[in-house]
Image (cartoon, rainbow, N blue to C red; front, side, top):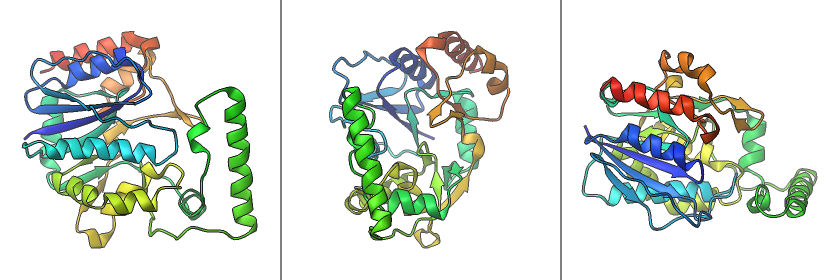
Amino acid sequence: MKHAYLVIAHNEFEVLKKLIAALDDPRNDIYVHIDKKVTSCPVLQTQYAKLDMLKKRQDIRWGSVSQIKAEYLLFEAALANDTAYDRYHLISGTHLPLKAQDDIHAFFREQSGKEILNFLYTNSYEIDMKLARYHFFLNYFQYGKPWIKRIANLCWHVIIKLQYILSIRRRALDVHIKANNWVSLTEQAVQHIVSRKKEVLRAFRWSLCGDEYFVPYLIADKKSGFTVLDEPKLLFNEFVGSNPRILTMEDYAFIIHSDYLFARKFSQSAMDVVDKLVETIKRDV
């Protein structure tokens, strides 16, 4: 089996280097997208895996369709390769595998032909708010001067409120499932997703966090013909408010002995746990 790892990164490059080292295996090809806002990209190297640093890059803004566009760049880059991959893993640059590659490949052999997602709780209100309303000013929520972010946030709230008062809605999408945007897919699913790119970018253009909905929208419908598995152990990822919690050495014993395949978020502020995890899984080869 040959796996493609599709990595989205924008910072924490010391962690990214450790991630690449953990994935460096002749059975893997690694594709890395560095946010276009980054002016000095890290130097990454592999000994066994093919490494492709994407030249075409997306300026990713939280919550906007730019996240989906970046994922499409990675899907398309991997499909353009002559290699037929059994599995496409979309991960962030702050992920780490918790198992050796032998174990990860064995797990996905057992799940051959299945699309592995990690479902998240949602409800009709959230789906309506995020997908059926127009979300403007997202590009400035986390970027620029503080006063620009405050104005953007205020304008977004006012426009959302007006849409509810005036009953303004976008065309409703047939979406019922929300899933973590970090997924593990077959080549057939990735080809299907890429074939629907124009439709997706149009349908999710003004959505909020549409990256958590567009893959289930395309492949979780019974008519799609794909077998979708909700697999909680795909990723250990805890949130504090709206942000993923940084994992530290205090988490090491739990995650290394867990059934999870991957975990995030790791940071340069806690490199001791990063170093120990990578050392452990490489020793298990």
